Amino acid sequence: MSDFDVIVVGAGYGGVTTAALLAREGRRVLLIDKNDRAGGKAMTIRRRGYGYEMWPVLSLPADDSRFHELVATLGIEGEAPLIVPEGDAVDLRYLAADGTWRGYVGPSKQADDPLAVENLEATFGVGPEDVEAMVEMTAAVLTLGDDDVDALDDTGMLAWLRGYGLADPVIAYLASMLNLVFVAPVDRIPASEGVRTMRQLFLGGGGRYHAGGYGRVAEACADHLVGHGGTFLTRTRVERILVEDGRAAGVDTAAGTFRAPVVVSNAGIQPTVLKLAGEEHFPAEYAQRVAGLEPGWGMVGVRYFLDAPVFRTGMTMVFSDQSWWDTERYEAAHRGEWPDVPLVFVAVPNLYDPSLAPEGHQVALVGILGDADPRAVAFNEEAIARAEAALADVFPDLPARVERREAYSAHHVSNLTRDAAVPGAGGECIGLAQVIGQCGRSKPEAATPLPGLYLTGTDAGGYGCGTHQAVDSGFTVAAAVLAELDARQPT
Ligand SMILES: Cc1cc2nc3c(=O)[nH]c(=O)nc-3n(C[C@H](O)[C@H](O)[C@H](O)COP(=O)(O)OP(=O)(O)OC[C@H]3O[C@@H](n4cnc5c(N)ncnc54)[C@H](O)[C@@H]3O)c2cc1C
Image 1 (cartoon, rainbow, N blue to C red):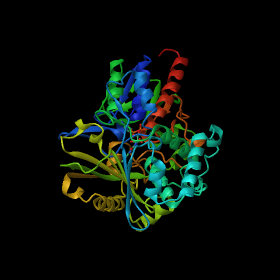
Image 2 (spheres, rainbow, N blue to C red):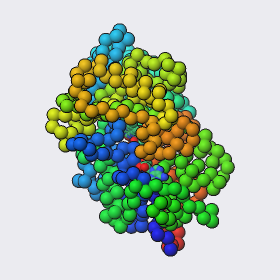
Image 3 (cartoon, protein in one colour):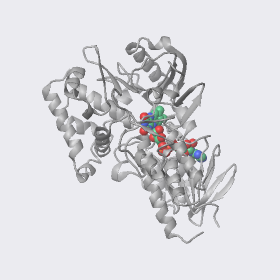
Image 4 (cartoon, rainbow, N blue to C red):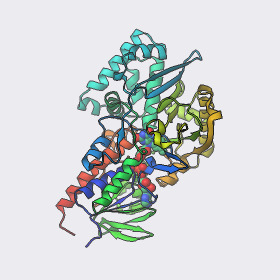
């Protein structure tokens, strides 16, 4: 007799989605995380009067998302209300080629902006033909059929965008946005993934947050699990996934050994296969492929606690024509050739939910593209210093308003979430890099070749932007596990 029907390793958004959906179906579920609460990379902490994530986390799409489906399916809408931004949601600051800063404040869904075309022309200094090209590209994003989109698995997103003859400032805007969504080189993001995700953005907008903090939905999922007879073990690291008679059989932890016929891992494909289970349990070809998978880039930055408001909207993006990175620009930065302005993203949680900061204060979470290698300390520090200088240029009041400043880097991301199973990995922002050869039809399957072992989260089974991808995967994996359990004899 097994202790549980399913053990889920990791309470990131992939893990909690799978675990809560299975518990709701009456399965005996054990959810284990090494942290003290659910949320993984998107967890919310509450400290010194503030509630915030460790870095900027907002969701795309804002509306009509898998998160909406998740809270509706579990009936937890009231415990973790989703906040879809309305009105002025985003502040774009663009350094034009003539050296002047141009600004645009507007809704996160361009369709909600009656002056979209005029604003586009004014912000980016483009003419009617450029607007026409953008309209044509937008129409393609919205209307391409599934097969046509699938056929773009091997086409880079940058080449796809350039195919529409877009002006440089428009490319700068779109490529910067894609960099922030995928945290990967724009030339290697598959156009299939890019087009699908841009469609979600155009239709649903971006920048959803959750009342009580972005991680609130994960906490509510964990509560739901416990309310349905499941067990949530926190501060417990899984040391090993047990393999017996050629299938996953449970986990070893410092708190003991737990057994189940199905183990779902949210710890990342490389840590799961290469460390927790052990590559000897997989076909050599699979283990080799996993070892060779490429992690995404890192995102690094600072948390500012401000004694007065500085930012006007929940989202701010600062960029120039040089800010976005493809493979070549990323390598150039590693050679010391930095852009004039780094791509900077700022999220302000208490502009969504005022209870997340003392009255009159702001908590601003700043993110910049970086290196995922926990050892790339100097490179990431330089990226942070450059971003802070750019922000002080754009928001001259900012430095004087900072009461407390906390920097974070790839090693912090790795410590909080996933282990470095291969050199250079661990601190990736999203997870497995969303690049050609690892997405769409080439994405690793959620079911591994080891019977009884599944992967949930960003590395398998979903598509789209970070947390949304994790929840998407969580749904897929819950359905697959239910089917497997239903097909098995009772244990
Ligand atoms: C700086 C930064 C900014 C980001 N901004 C955004 C954003 O704006 N929008 C967005 O959608 N996404 C954003 N993301 C990405 C997003 O947070 C992640 O892609 C997503 O949360 C990953 O979810 P997951 O379920 O795959 O795994 P994770 O969140 O990585 O969760 C994995 C969990 O497994 C646990 N675990 C791992 N190994 C073990 C073990 N051996 N034993 C026990 N527990 C274990 C970890 O503690 C963790 O809780 C950002 C990430 C970072 C780092």
